[in-house]
Length: 202
Image (cartoon, rainbow, N blue to C red):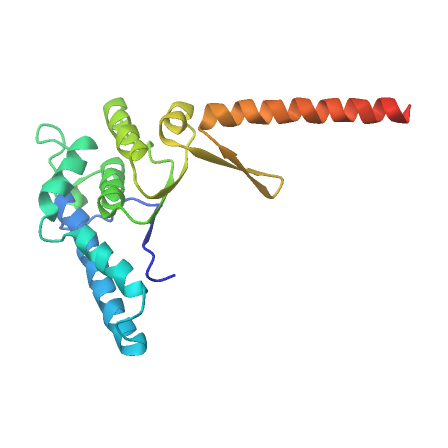
């Protein structure tokens, strides 16, 4: 639904004149403008009793465009931006692809959408930034869906696991290690059932 905000992290930030901080804040400003337009549209079509308006108002309060810069800088700092190596006030066009990917990740984390979709978010991050990201996402208060090759990252962040196997989604409670144990236990049960059926047939 349009009133549910979603962010899919799938590409690096474009090379522009904007600094990393400006790029992060610009996304939130655009989102706030979109929600304000949607708010007006719903008011015209459905009136002030529409329950979507409360969700939009809450989201606009949460975005807090006025106090955005300090929060943006805190996230960029966690992802490794600092004046000695790559300043967060450097234009994105003067950054390599890996650092622009960090800008894109900062946009996603700063927006803190209701549904955050991350595909391999630890790519291009050093160990210190990975540890910071694990800690940040482990406390993410909304819905996060992440794909990662890092078992340690999945164990630190995830509370549920979804396995796509043979065109079927299977849902498991717990982190990656819990998922592995459960799959192994299910496989043992299936083997025993197969052996029993085979013995019965014989």
